[in-house]
Length: 114
Image 1: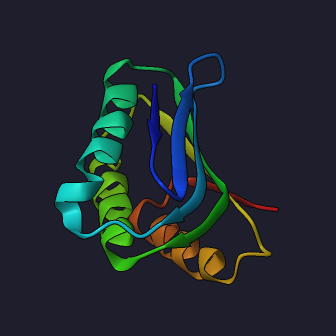
Image 2 (image 1 turned 90 degrees about the vertical axis):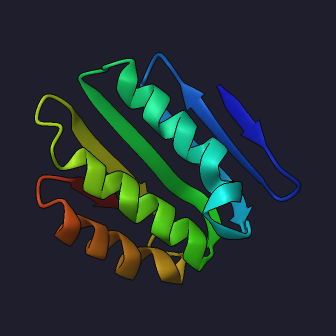
């Protein structure tokens, strides 16, 4: 599964159950983020034991994207059978603060900053 935009790419690697985000996500509103949220939910529906969101190559995420990601994480809190890891980059300033806040929303979230 892959979603390509002008300045971004979101793709799912089935072998590692990893969703990779690349580029800059500056979409307008939740409607434009719907395909990405659908990809995330489709991955969850396939029921892997663990999923990884790799944000290490995501340079920018606007407020609508933050809302979309936050809602996804909140929804994952009730899924006790699946473990979730988020990979972030310390070199991208917005990531450390946002990703730590996501960990507050889902305390059992495994967060790895590189």
